[in-house]
Picture 1 (cartoon, rainbow, N blue to C red):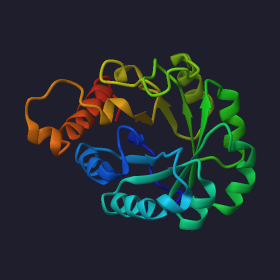
Picture 2: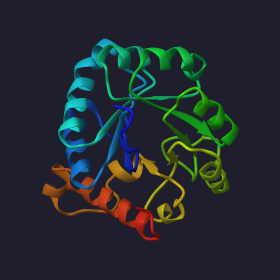
Picture 3: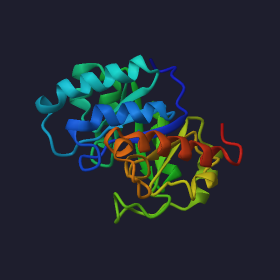
Picture 4: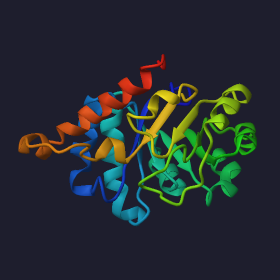
Length: 223
């Protein structure tokens, strides 16, 4: 499982933009647009309330060659045997123990610190995320991360790098050092007014958003 290629557009769910009732359809439309990694992030529900949904999301990702990641909930990740787990500031103190119990991919948020990323790399983390790279509508108070951090990280780390925070079609081309770009609002939001009710109802704009993000990112040579 840990030999998976961690590269491409990385979509993260949002309880407001991707509610449970429509998430599966929205995920499918993102996959049609070229999504390669999907993280289910839910800070509100209890584990037993989302266990079934997590299983469905993992299955959809498996069927479409998309890598599935569960945010923070390491106990549920271990119980369900999901393919990936992403840890934030509050969970990293348990990282060594989690690594012993979880055989899948582990990613960790490193904010603006390459030194932190290096310490995580030594204990077996599979990828690290830096951000917020730009002003984020999802996390308005996120610590800014200069783009120079990505350059330093690419030089000093051997594991893949993910950029996050305010990434959109207008700035994605500046993220050539990133193996992955993680997006929320710019993927799930209706970017511009659309008079086609069918397009809105069927979430076709998500497919368009995904394609546009990938094209913008690749416009300066990102593969």
